Image 1 (spheres, rainbow, N blue to C red):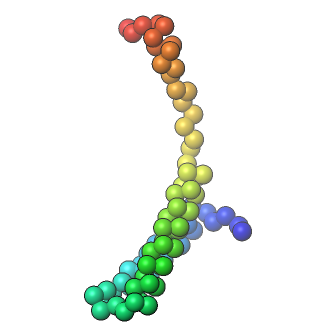
Image 2: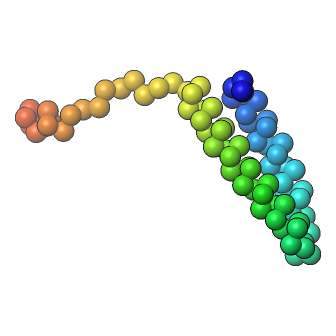
Image 3: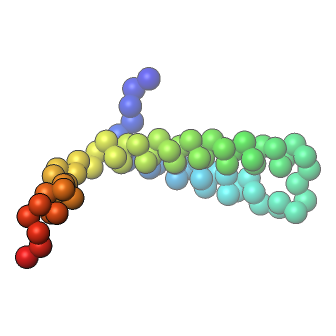
Length: 79
């Protein structure tokens, strides 16, 4: 499966989120099937959000700073 660009991931998530919100309309009157469909949509939406997060991480700069070793701080002392 081809990876989507970050902007495509955002669009996919947002479009599905809007459709899910529309499916929630009338929630107090939903029958069991309608409730199950909405819960399934929310589950799918969580997966899209996870994909969006991963796409963001893959497209953002990596943390290139080198963490300071606590042992080094102890050896050197503080200034």
